[in-house]
Image 1 (cartoon, one colour):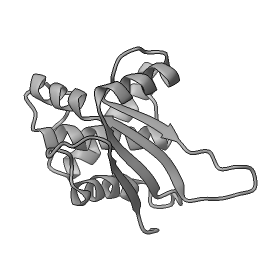
Image 2 (cartoon, one colour):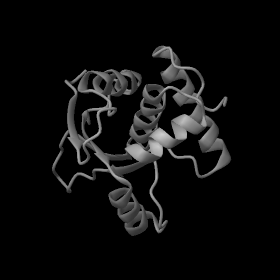
Image 3 (spheres, rainbow, N blue to C red):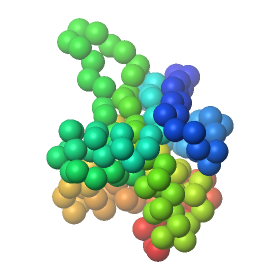
Image 4 (cartoon, helix red, strand yellow):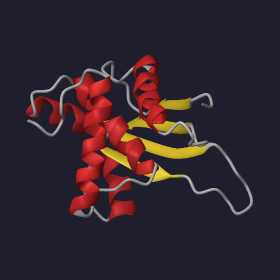
Length: 153
């Protein structure tokens, strides 16, 4: 397996953001499932509701902040880079969801990071069968971290 490179960006001053150690553990969990994937560099950016809303509106046509946005990197023709893509995570939305779902914040963050990376790897949940496959993989990966099923609220 290649070495994992995480560019952790905090565009907000929030003491409850995941540490680099936590991010590395969660990201490694996903990459261990896909050991042959050469793309093991990514950016994880923590933002406020304003930035999340603007990105969600501009790229998804939804005028509201969201928990995690995934931006897969596409290699230019003929060039191979190890960059998987970018995750943009809105702390306020993740914290609110964790509170509403009575989950530890770190568990919900782990879920959002894993969910986002799976999107970067090409998984989706638009169709029911895709959603079931992706959610089952999320459950399995989170279980390796001793985090309960995030869909059993």
